[in-house]
Image (cartoon, rainbow, N blue to C red; front, side, top):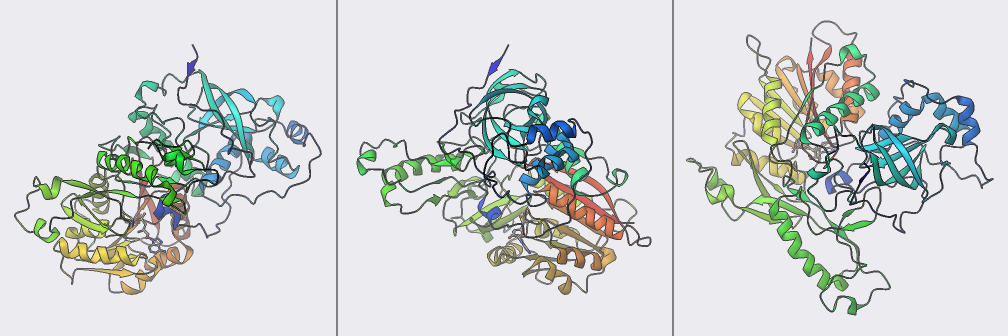
Length: 563
Ligand SMILES: C[S@@+](CC[C@H](N)C(=O)[O-])C[C@H]1O[C@@H](n2cnc3c(N)ncnc32)[C@H](O)[C@@H]1O
């Protein structure tokens, strides 16, 4: 029997056909990250050509003589658009895509905008969307369907066009994937419309497995490594909290539109033109959201109460606003007193939470035995429940095991407020961290003091990550471990060059973008492959951590060692 998706929605006026999907809204820290680096194209040969070239050319020739529009450039390598494009290429066949593109058909959908069609989902893309192929008579084209799962037959309404695909808005699941889909698991009334979560209808166990697949595909597509040198990807580590885990949210709203009247809010009710919340899936429009079940309760309480004020005072806003809510331990307690033994972790200071909504305010949290204080608007990981597991895992990775010498020196690059440098410091004689954000570095220095780590043991430098290598010249490379945790764009050429020149024994690469991680790890392994014994890097392990349950995102941790 056909299952109806309760939260699917009609196309809104703003979802007009555009040249390309606009970038989804990103967290504030991610907005800082603009992918500048152009890397060599990592396009692979197609695995399978499913449609003949002849049919490709026949079907993709524009039906009507339209004025030729300049096509957008290829997506930035490793960006979400590129990852999706590579997945579509793999499904359609590289040669077919080249042929269609040369014939000017890469942005010529075989569907009308708003048309309702049935398609079968071939696979789940790394961004968490189902990818279907148009039937052969339509020619080579994909339909990308958010909230649809592999193997499902679905009815969709065709929306925007992008390179070689249309977005299909899910109207109905005709044949469900009984192994993966369980709609009774969905806990959010906005699921199916909100762009935040992709997998609420999938069990935790299956989400972990989908995320493992993302790592597998990323290394296959972007590392340019032979399969034999990629270790088996280990099972993804589950987050202890899978709802109510997110410690930072950034809802937003626009100023009143021109047609709005003050009377619209006189009764205290929310006018239909005011939307406060997150982006609709595959759209830049805002979906009005009253609460977000993946965020912690304290954030939801504050947000709900603020929404009332915003509605009442909406005419005082002359611009759109991006709000920020951060879950913090109560900062009215003295942090140094908290950390002075005997430490009572059950006291109010360690258990009472507050919501910080001032970007410049101070936020505080415990990770394992360490207390971190940082600028609420700055970077800190957003899922406190799984952080101790990830930090412990990195500590264990660095430990070479019995009978082998443990590294004595640690370098934490892209160190933020000092998470890895401080949490791992007890296992090392000397620790150095580097970070671009001056406020984060100030926090890291203060956090070292707060956690009683002596000045002559730990140092933090503000600047480009690649600058660290000049300052750790006295660190013996053969006894040094380095943690790399860059933003989504990954490491730049200069950093990788300096890393290879330094050639320390152990490298742990932590990343929220497994695609740039795969690219960088590939470079590290390939560049050293022909060097002598003890000078080559081997990729020893790869494992995902579920920092973002219910979404398609995965944090990936790679271990490289010299051999
Ligand atoms: C993913 S965060 C990791 C922070 C920290 N390791 C943690 O887990 O809390 C990446 C950090 O890299 C910093 N960053 C971005 N570009 C950088 C660069 N070129 N050099 C040094 N740090 C940079 C950002 O400010 C951010 O704090």
